[in-house]
Length: 572
Image 1 (tube, rainbow, N blue to C red):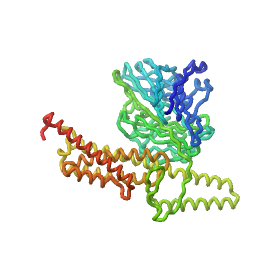
Image 2 (cartoon, one colour):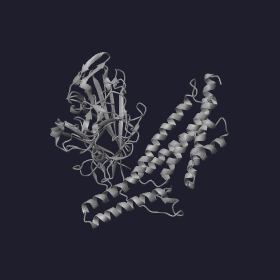
Image 3 (cartoon, rainbow, N blue to C red):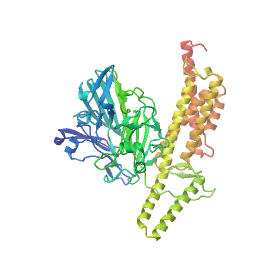
Image 4 (cartoon, rainbow, N blue to C red):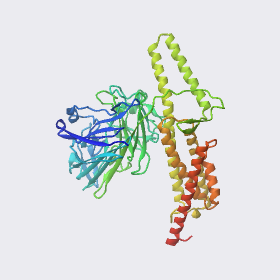
């Protein structure tokens, strides 16, 4: 059983701040009361060696007191910029302190990162460990109105580290809280983050900025066709080396990316990966945006990257942005979660297989199917071409360039598997959205009462079925992708998510078709839809279980709805 611990000690050199350490077998996190600075986040690399993955000042306490780059501290009362420090709430104008050119940034001169918080509570059991910190920001603090009571809870659970923010006020004010964690996943923090791969599959829009980081007027910009397209993995060095007016404006990336989703629902932001250490961090959040900052003004430029989950910059002056206004009686809440994993070092073996050997094979107790003969052949030719280039360089004694080319080859081969895992996750995000649309279509088919298939018009039922079939087709393609030999723990996560997708899809299909067909016909239809052709027997049995379970759930829900209708005397 995994052991969790909470330890603490006081540091006189940091305003007698208490340092709290949460630890288990996979993560060690140390947080200071002063500014809620994260002194270190330690996780293992692919060799099992623990080392910090966040940039920090170590035990040089004076640097934390004099920090001006927000090195792994909390940011508030308002994270990011408010143009000229001015805002209007209920017709009254407020002037906050200016500390970033002409603007107020991260709460002003003495923001939450300069406050001495109180470690108010700790907790641990067999499954998690947490530490709670509280602080009151007085009315008028840095020009912000209202007494704001803030609580931040740090929790570790398995390989996950989360931050939860709570706040209440006694007068209307604005709140935007985040943590300015700077990641460098390399064991050697003298290295830049140029080789780190960043992927944010759902971040299809970003905010252009001007005048020191203030979003330009108008709608958000599509990332497609720009250097800011991280919907597939990109090396940060490749992005920063490009010429772009927005990169010039900020001396690198310092932009907000929009994350689609519902208020207070967890959204999958994406992942950051370092090939040299094998470390990867997956990030999810309830916030509608993420500010990606590539450390453009750090003492060593681009030495780390901050991915700050938050609301958009200058929101108090932009009614078209999600609101950051908090009123008395309301409760502010947000959560960000980091999942730390390791990608094992694995050179992709590319081989041509005969039809007899390219089918189902066992891997780690699971049946996997390889239908990528053409793709393997294409990749094989690329790899052989690169190796021929390396051999030619070696003959010409251009050893330095040959070594560099070999590194590129290794990175490409290693990233190949990683890209497939990320692709699967992106596919799942798309599936979730499509299922949400299907659910809305079915729910909106009758506005007067909960969904009951008998109330659907023929046209609505047909549209719902077509949408469901489209979802199914995409799900089948994605599950084949999983069967085709994805490596690493991402595969298991992907398959678990696919189970949920297929289960929900079957449920919707059965709900739609139940009134027109017998239960067995509905099951047969759903089973035929979700079962990939050529699927192994083990998987066939599992899928049959899902469909039968969905059918039972469908019948139960139909009975409940009919009871509700009879009880409330709705007209049939």
